[in-house]
Length: 490
Image 1 (cartoon, rainbow, N blue to C red):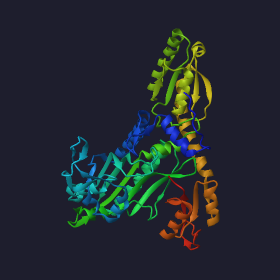
Image 2: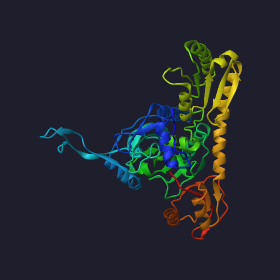
Image 3: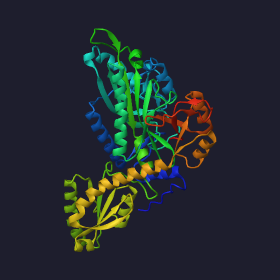
Image 4: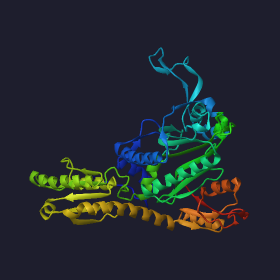
């Protein structure tokens, strides 16, 4: 399999697009702005989904499902929410097609809906309308619900996984009796996301708060995790929102507390999407293709036999099947590729392109010597391992490769995080090394907007464990309580 990938140095954006397609992850569809996630890409998403779902349930959450369509009137109940999503909404106005006099299919003008339906861009409104029926007393709280779903946000400029009109995600929506509980929930879910992205995706993240300008529409506070891609751009990997009582007031969701008083419910919402696939690709992959962390790889190990005749294939297969059984018993996901339609060299290229963490080759000499060849995808190194040591060796490699990918990404982030003390220095860093830039900001939306317009850099977050030393804003010279994290971003 010839890869012929554009290199990252030549054109990072082109490299990314080619890799997504050539590694069989996804492709553009016949519907403008929408993608087809292919089986290999979906298998990775299923791994992401399975681990997150487990973590959600371990923190007390349950899955439910709410309608895809939301009445337009629901959106108008929370003003800042509708303002935030109005330009991205797909609207259903009719419910029937018919044939015209020429036999062409047209929208039946007599089948106009009394009220237009919005294809969900997010589900706060439909869920809070539902919660009004579920909540009467403090005994009904908290409600800790998540849904796995698709959403539509009408994007004009799209890129596979990173920005598409329709995408897959999960959205948690919780209801609480107190402000303290709701804030604790929002913080907890930010920490769950950070733990998942670091431990499973091997991507280091910075936890922080969004500025008022960058907050989710309708939120009082947005917690986020920010990651740095290899081209020096930031990517928001997950968000968790403290919604206060805004949606409870908009949808009249009250409960009777222990003292018999009526109170509005406190809310959160939180979500991650198939955008995580983009983060995974852009953090670890190289000019040879995808590089997957073992914790998320659909196949952690692939075994390829090398042979010239049926006898050699039978001998290699016997070793391979025994080894596969042992590796699976050790909890690993293993594939034995004995297809006779492709040569071993083609298969090696394919699995390198698809990012399989470890490849084992078994040829006639290996059978004779009771050894196998073990190749690592992360370092592109090979070694000969005796059969009796293979299982322990590969179990160890899973941990080693996972750690190596995280450490490499962390080293890159450290090298591309710069503290600056002037606006000239700020602009110079963005145009040279790029990456995260720590700088003082005066806290005003006006300064934030001017910096964004002049440099295309946004405040990614106010780091939760960042430098809280006061100083002066790099743009206005006004007092600043602490440094914030800037970057150009996806």
